[in-house]
Image (cartoon, rainbow over all chains, first blue to last red; front, side, top):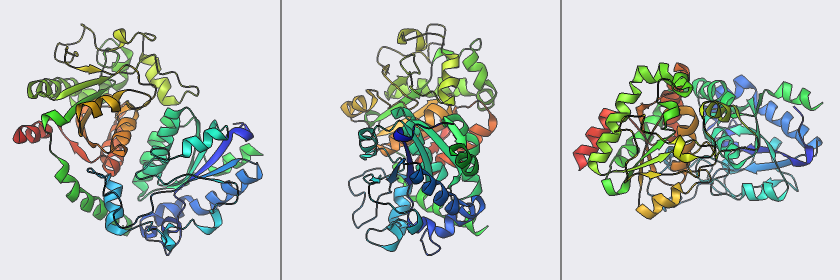
Length: 203
Length: 226
């Protein structure tokens, strides 16, 4: 797969300490799949390599929870109910900071926060990518079947070419992960691959 | 083990809250039929053949007929959102290819929506709405659906259609994001394989779709409140 380097962005979805650090609130839920697929090392390798390629690096961060979050919504997304219950990704806390080894650098795109699942819905991500002439996106991060898949589905409907990496995403359970990467991703991705083959393909 | 236990506990806790959403006042409820069109419902069509195994297992057509008839009798808004030749992606994903393979016509939406060949109860009636400007997998993508729902004051969306992990999945994710209460009628949905249907219904949808009900349970719930 050849990517137009000036028109391709790596989008990192929700790379927060709460998901990636052993001290994070959601770590006990995601650690099993995260370790199985070697996600953290894969995300780091992909991010470093895409920076070397001169690609745009974009961050699609989840809503940082604060008192009163979602009070304007009558019907909550299941993830919002859980976020209210657990205060995960709490604003101004360790959990909602980007994980150090994949944190943003100067010049990266940091989108406004998404309230539910898709990195595009209700955010300025599409606008920022469009301003930079991005046509191709590669997704990595959390969770395989919720935010990653929702972001991929939005990206497809917005007209992007979408690459999904089946070992640079993670989920709560192996079954959730499987439902996404083995069943739905093959229908959605313009290019579905793994970290190793993706990196080799860029060589 | 611990991980599965935590996952199930979280799902249980969320569901306790979500049960309060299950109300379907007729003037604030719409039945949204995604890809419910002749290509995917008539036996001689390749689209039907692609989903027929799962569709026959769940009794899709009988349930769809029952659901639409019920919605009409109750006065629930019915909205058809067919997959048409207007959907022309710059980069074609495998899902687009699957849909396109079975669409026989170009841009003429009148030929894409259910025709007289279908049973009367599944055909759109004069009161139904047909959204013909959809541009993506989601019924909301590029379309006037959201505006029409706002104009009608709709809050509860009840979804049915032949492709649980293509059009229904994208549409329901958007519906929940936009603040609606989304309900999937599980036996008014199908897929091209058993595993796609089962994984969507049992694993993926419960993570983001607030309500999953069988046709019978939905009708009982909606009747109880009317």
